[in-house]
Length: 537
Image 1 (cartoon, helix red, strand yellow):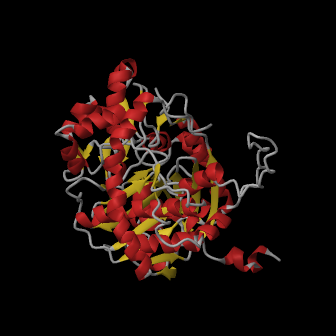
Image 2 (image 1 turned 135 degrees about the vertical axis):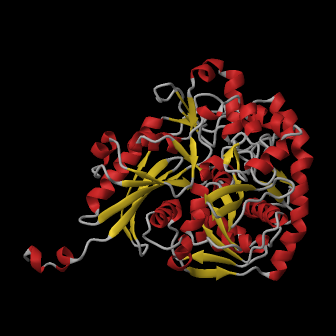
Image 3 (image 1 turned 45 degrees about the horizontal axis):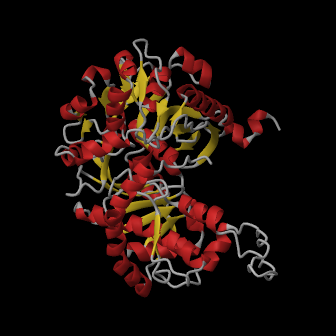
């Protein structure tokens, strides 16, 4: 067929925005048109290194290369469509030291890095700790840049002396791509260094961190448009030099956009390896006890909520470490010692099989609670020394009880986050949930029952990359408002709480909550007596 007779060839080019989502394990670039249709995508991964206990770092050059490669592949696959611009999402809480030439002095210190636990606990316990949280919106926790900067000041004075700038990974990638050194209000509000009420770097936080304002990037709105690419970026992406780049935001707030939870009263809940519960509001706020974070999305949209470290990883651990069974019985003892040969190891059951078994156990797991703090924990307590535990364990409990208690522990932890959000004065009328674990009915039912609220499951989960693209479309004038996300991503199914099971979880919640504080002294002593095991054993 001749080109002039090909309907596709005659179709007018559409404006597309490429959302670039720089996550902890990979960067994904996805092209969307203004209807929300996905036209092309590409993803490139990179490792997370742990060179020392508590460290979790990455090579910034690999992240930049992944962003370039993803954009280049997407541009090559969208044909004649017009790229109206790029828009960025980034994992939150990263920190990177740059020298006078703006070259990296350190790897990217990620949110998962816990080296600053002692510094965070010290500041958190001080008279200034809660006040800092209320001003900056960021809990005092080793995940955030503020305690990490204190750690560098105390442990790496040579790096501190050489550092001309302290930035996040997205700041540095945009510097290389566009030549501008800026931090958006969203990532600024997750640093522990920005006053969320004044939208300016906080003087007391900077004093504690030992940094000056000129050592931090310029703060800008998330919808700021950077005009033009550097020669390096043009060569690496295949885009023209005049391509516009929207600074974008953190992946947490943008994930709310990605599921259509953009209006007050609509919360987004996600459970992957970790988990989170967040709601969009029109002004910044933190609950009186400092149980939730508050991060910017746009100048008039803020996201309040909490993230938990232990989501699907909890079931993964139960499956891999304690769910090998039922084992083949050992032969009868053949001597006076009563000893027989060891049972044969059974094949590892699938997660679905374990969940099917656990679904036969009534809510409450026979009086067994699991505190799922295998990777310490964040919201709503924000401590860095807590450890996991099964409490109430008896000889009568079986594998299915341990599995169900793990699922319930994750759901109960999220219910504590919801409780803190409501303590901040938030009214939550609707919850939208996503995540790989949600494919099984037990997770969906337990979450609805523990939260005591109906939960909607969107037809598809577009994620932070789609949120970045939508934010970019608003910044570039292609859509009137990010409110269109609610219509673009309809709810496909709903799970309502079951009254009897919801009542069980309501009665267990205060016990579950109290166990956190009750076990802290024991956890602190154990940490002093025996070092933690490495995560990659």
